[in-house]
Image 1 (cartoon, helix red, strand yellow):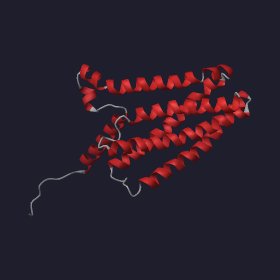
Image 2 (cartoon, rainbow, N blue to C red; image 1 turned 90 degrees about the vertical axis):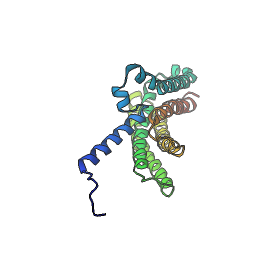
Image 3 (cartoon, one colour; image 1 turned 30 degrees about the vertical axis):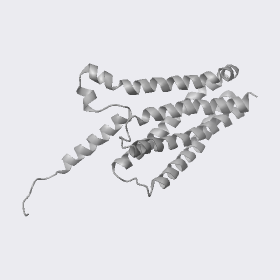
Image 4 (cartoon, rainbow, N blue to C red; image 1 turned 180 degrees about the vertical axis):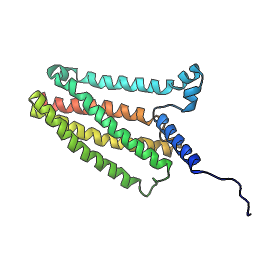
Length: 213
């Protein structure tokens, strides 16, 4: 109607974008931004109980996975020193995928027409990284422990777990989004559980089958 109702400056938009990005980052770890930062101690503590409880249960599951292969670890102590590497690298890879996917959902860049392509792309990226870095750490392990077969098992476990991390990194936010929940909420906790427990299972399982039979 020929009247200026207001103005929206660039700095305001940048502040808003930055704030939303920080909120997404916090929600990935089960936090809620300013409410957790400035809220009362008791309420902030209670708000974190859910994901702490989930994390405790998932850590227990991961420990039981290791317990299944106690005999294998006793026979080949190198397994105990190498298995955290498989879980850690996969966790980092999965968190990168989660960050990209959550950002894409927040900006409406991901839809039913391109989600399949993006899923295949992330799986391909993880496969390449798994082959490259799995080969590197496998070579290091084989030289360090004088066991070429151990290096091959390490490389294979790294490759499989990185692909799994990409699948979970896409699947968890996508499922949360489909259910009408914030796709960032708690995704890193669920991702860490999967990459830890499955990383241990894959590596120790392959070692048991191919190295200790």
